Amino acid sequence: MKVLLAKNSGFCDGVKRAIRTALSAAEKGKLSADGPLVHNDQALNLLSLRGIGILSGPAAVNAPDGGQVLIRAHGIAPERRRRWLEAGCRIIDATCVHVARNQRLVREAAARGETIVIAADPSHPETLAVAGEAGPRCRIVSSLAEIDALEKETAEEGIVLLAQTTFNAKLFGEMAAALTRRFPDCRIADSICQATRDRQDEAERLSAAADILVVVGGRHSANTRRLAEAGLAAGKPTRLVETAEDLRPGDFAAFRVAAVTAGASTPGWITQEVVNRLRRLGQPCPGDRLFRLAHFLIESRLSTALAAAGLALAAQQLLLTSPAPPLIIAGAGYVFFAHILNRRLPKNPAAARLSPIDSYYQARRGRLLLAAWLAAGAGLILAAGEGGAVFALFLSACIAAALYAVPASRTPAFIAKIRLAFNPHHWAMPAGWTLILAGPPAWEAQRLVPGLLVPLFIFLIRLGGTMVRDLHDIASDRLLGIDTLSSRLGPEPSKQLATVCLLGAALAPVAVLAITAWHGGASTAWLLSAAFIPAAPGLGLFLLELLRRRSLSDAILLQAGVDGICVLAGIPVIVASLAAWAQAC
Image (cartoon, rainbow, N blue to C red; front, top):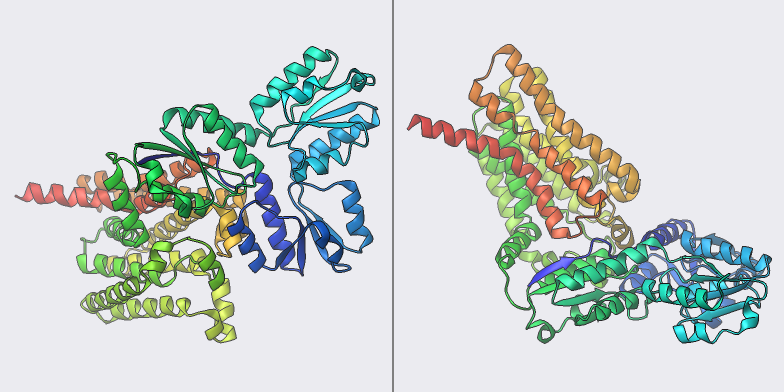
């Protein structure tokens, strides 16, 4: 089945900020949230593993004196806030900026004596938080009939209509028109957040292009239900699921194209699991086999090994050394070994069980580990054939990768500190790629400046590509406890650093080409083929731009692109070698 994934899906900015704030506060001491941070059981279970409790209803009086209480994105009514302060609690406010704006609008309208009409779900926590600022002159409505039932006295001092930030945009427009007809002097404050509008509009557009709409999210989530309503309004079959386990194959047997969107409280990895499962359901489409091949290559890390082979070829091309298949295969084997042993999995075993992230690896762990050790052994045998120094280099790199894979609880304290500083998913892994793929040919070439620039090219292109991948779902990585450089730095600094890395990776081969051409040390054919190598980091910049525009939401496609960056770097070498072979024949 073909799957269309909404680019505006998953955690909204308000939820991301609330989770980030909660995780930071939980590191400083016990933290309790004033109600569920998100409407998603899997995410709530993961938050509880990080020491974040939930206080709601009667449990509110049990908060410890002086404890930390988090105000979630929904906000909080003034009276409830006072209760926490009187209990001696430290308030940590993670109210969504759009909800805070609504509260401010209501306070100002109440000060003017206006009647405040809120289009909202009466029992929703956000509604209670906003209405708590309004005083007695407040009406909560959820249908056109309730607008028509408003009494004339309501507008004596003026009337203002605003909406819950996740309210149905079309219904709010109809309610605003109805209120304006009854009370021409009323004020309309369109307070539905733009993210909600974009999600609802996109759900309608995708529904029109698909046979069925699948909405991923908690059944108690207001914004998730609104997305389902958008699909039903478009006249398409709609399924609301919380996880991939809720998908019933019989529901999709007759469909060829499915559209997928997700609520603002849905972690990205859950949506990706739904997308992956849907592609195996329904009527077959031309891209099914290609996707399954891509999924196999990526989840098995074979695509990463191919990426290493591409960079090894590029390094040898730039250093004017002839392609050395043993070094290329050994380098790919080492990379496969290092990445299998150091998977991006949650540190907490309970978190790994709660989330389906990297389920392919968890289901095949034994076989993949065996393949990794065999690859390392084959690589060492091939490296030994290249000399003692090369063998020692590969052996040291394999030992380092194996040591990084040992759980921190089983290593001495000083090694744990080193590992924390050089997290394999930050600097150590790109450095390992650089040492193994560029070290031997750089030493053999005996060319000082290219011998420095080519390793720099490999380090920057791999670091930049890794950051592009990790930028895809920083919030989920934080929630799972997966420590990446992007999750530490945050979205904007990470985008800037990834841009610098990829630009540097594009300039390094250009400098090598210029130096080589100046000294006349290469043929025209070599220059023409090597001139295409800077296009590889250019692909990385393109992927980064797609992420900025939210035009790339599928994690499988993104990982394929990131590995494809490195594969692309080696293609000019293959083309040049084939051309030389053809010419010789």
